[in-house]
Structures are given as structure tokens and as C-alpha cells.
Image (cartoon, rainbow, N blue to C red; front, side, top):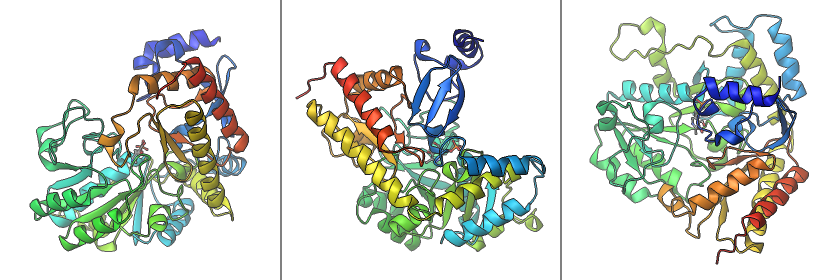
Amino acid sequence: MKTSDATSRSLAVFPAGSNGEFNLPPELAMVIERGCGCELWDTEGRRFLDFSMGWGSVLVGHARPEVVEAVTQQAARGSNFSYVTSQSLALAEEIVRLSPACDAVRFCASGTEATAYCLTLARASTGRAKVLKFEGAYHGAHEVGTTSLFPSAEPDYPRPDPTSAGIEQTVRDTVLVAPFNDLELTRQIIEQHRGELAAVIVEPLQRCVPPAAGFLEGLRAITAEHGVLLVFDEVVTGFRLAYGGAQEYYGVVPDLVAYGKALGGGYPIGVFGGRSDVMDLVREDRLGRETYVWTASTLGGNPISTAAARAALKVFGTEGVYPRLHALGNYLRDGMRRVLAERRVTAQVIGDGPLAQMVLSDANVRDYRSSQHADKPLARRLMLGLFRRGIFLNPMGTKLYLSLAHDEAACDELLAVLAEVLDAEAVQAS
Ligand SMILES: Cc1ncc(COP(=O)(O)O)c(C=O)c1O
């Protein structure tokens, strides 16, 4: 079948020909056939260099042989039992070992589920209804996760702005929003709502914006002072910034933590875990008690995903992996800065570890609002220009994901294409 057929079929059955949040114009819609390492091919045989990597879930690289082998072996032994298996047990033990926050864990099938469970647990354990999140942070496709993700109205902290329609008023009444990296305002909001606030949820590296010095430590101190649970959404940072994720990288230990993405080696996974007194609320022998929390995920911890995750962890645990990911990230970010500066484009490149984002602005990006001064029409043209020339990325422009399959040559290829796109756009910003 020709791609043009596949693409029109895709446009017929998927809204915008997309499975969610990709925003390609119809003429660029395509259908992927396969991937290997950091490359993928569409049904027409066109090759793309991948800087999305399954939105960061395939940090090991596409079709990584160790992961393929683990999954293949397990597939012949059964794919799901919805109960503890030797695979999920060994994986849980390793996560509890590496994650200081986790005395106990449970598996689910996505990061969205994992953060949702963390918030429910926080509400149940504190008996409080409100949660605070940071503007521009994404915690999955549930209602809290998307609140104030892309607000356009002027900020009126801590009032939330629903990015998605269909959100209940109760959600709007219980979600408080603060600007990332503004510890003072966050402190004031927490103090104003103490007694009602169950949790503060944070992406320790918010999108690609690093935490300011002392910010995470400050959150830890304020939440502890007021009996508010601190939830780290490590769906992106987990196993990516360090083997022990943001907890190890920034040296701050939350009460609850959510993992997903890279852990699964490209297979569906989510993990939520934390202090044993909080995690004990999910024990089924407590069913019927006021604070009992229902958690159940049919495919959570299935042996295929957990076998893939164990293989991925083995790779991540190999000496030199994290220095390499950080060096490659620096190489890419420096290269992008160079290419942009040579063309006198007002821009900065943010991120950490194997993550990079271009912001076409001279503002010091420290939160959502400061990233919004960017030249968005130009950013859109650049993203689509890269895509058109064979760079597979999320054209919504949030971040570029590197993987262990990338190398300097892959980064050089992206940089050459970026230079070509900028020249084609004849960008001569001041
Ligand atoms: C920080 C963060 N949390 C949660 C999620 C949701 O994960 P999933 O898409 O696996 O549900 C994402 C997904 O991009 C994310 O970036």
C-alpha cells in the first residue's frame, strides 16, 4: 500500500490524522512503518531522524536488541496476569532500591495514571481536597494534569485556567496554580490554603526549564512544614537525568513519585510510589475504610512491559550511560546555540541532560510566562521546516528528546538541517 493511501486512511479515522497532540498540517501527515536506533521510516519508505523518540519513552533507542530479546522471551510465557509476576517483582525491588521516596510501589500503564494515583493518594492521606501545580506543567491527560498547561489569559494566581474543555467546576475549584521557580509566591499560596491543600505536584525539570537554585529544596521545606505531600512527577526526569532520576540529580526527596516513559524501554508503563504509610492506603484489606484508595490497572505491571523495563534498566545501569547522555545533550544544545547565533536569531536553547528546547526569545526562561514572549509563528515555521526535511519531532515544539541511539553525527545532521531551514526562512532577526 502506498503512503498516500495510508495517510488518507489515517486522516479519515484519526482526528487530524493524529493520535494526540502532534499538530501537523494535513500535507505533512504520515504513517510510520518501523524504527531502529534513532531513525524511523514511513510507509512510503521515507527516512526520518527521530528527535521525539516516542515522546521520550524510547530512551534506549528503537528496537534496542536487549529489549527486543527480553520482550520476545516473555511473550512466549504469557503477556498479562493482572497480578504480581517474577518480572514485576524484580522491577519493583529495583525501583524501591533506587528511589529514596519509594518504600513501596504499584504499577499502572501510563504516566497519566501514575500522577493521578499520586494525587488521589495525597488527598486521601491528608483528608484535604486541593492540589497545587505549576503553570505550564504537564502531568498527563487527566484534568489536573492539563489545567493551566497552555493558559493564554493574563495570570491570576492561584486561579487555574482549563486548557481542555469538559472540565468539572469542582476541578477548577480545587486546583491552585503557581509560577514555576517562584518560591515566594508559591509559599504565600500554600500558606493561604494550608489546611485545605493535599499536595504540591511538580515536574522537577519543568518541560525543559531547570529548577532555580533552592526551588525544589524550598518546596520540600514548605510542604513538610504544612503537612502537604510533595509529589515529584518523574515521568520525564526518571532514569533520564540520572539512574535515580531527579531525586538523585537534584538531591531532593519527595513524599510520592510518579514514573513512566523511559523506564518502559518503549513499552507501556507507569509507577507510583512513596512512603509506606501513604502507600498502605491502597491495601485491599482496607476496603470499606474511609481512607481506602482504589488503585487498579488491568495492564499495569504486565510481564511484557516489566521485562522491557528490566532490560532498559540494565542498559541504564551500564557505566558511562549518564555522562554520555549529558555530554550529548550539551553537544546538541551548544550546536543549536551556535547555528542560531551565526544567523543572528534571537533565541536560547534550554534543557538539561538529553533534552533540548529552542525558545525564540531573549527572555530568561524560568517559567511558563517567560517562555511565552517567543516568536511563535517563526518557531512553528522552523519546526515544520525541520519536519519537512526529515527530522521527526513534535511540531508543537515542546522539546527534543535524545536517546542512547543518538550520537554526535545524529546531532550534526539535525544542526545542518536547522541551518538549512533558518537560511531558507532567511531569518535575520536582530
Ligand atoms: C511530565 C509528564 N508527566 C506525565 C505525563 C503523562 O504520561 P503518559 O503520556 O504516559 O500518560 C507526561 C507525558 O508526556 C509528562 O511529560
